[in-house]
Image 1 (spheres, helix red, strand yellow):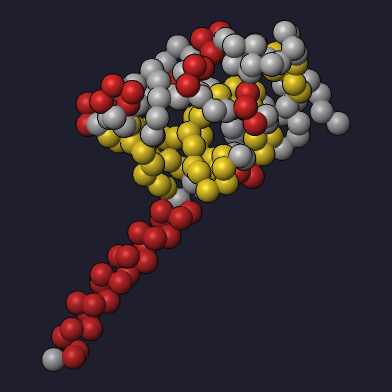
Image 2 (cartoon, rainbow, N blue to C red; image 1 turned 135 degrees about the horizontal axis):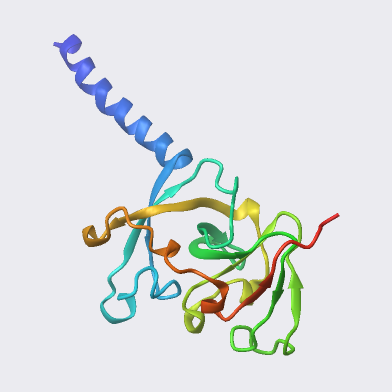
Length: 181
């Protein structure tokens, strides 16, 4: 009797272990809460509480990172809080601060994104805690890069963040590629 139960117990244990490794190191399902990425993601959150759910690639999350990519990262000001934002600036880029996004900033003030960091912003500038609040984000805080929407089913496998994206829509000016070093 014990020999018959062993395979029945082994299979679920292997399944749980495999799922755990995949979730920790390869892919993760992540729900986008709040309206900071609206209208691109969770556009109905403010009205109905509806959220978009993303498939996030966790392996090599910063390799080949580009402006416009949507990433998940640990918020610098709340290290227990995982957030989703758009990469607007890469290391060496000069970001001109918008006084509407960063109250108290000197008009036209600029920040050069330091080595090993990115500048991230939410698509809804009126409702986003992002680099305008806490400055450039260390690449080491990035846990993954969005692959596609998996929920709701009406948006299955879509990548809405790739449609007609530009920094003009975010009201942020970015001058790319100042040499670092």
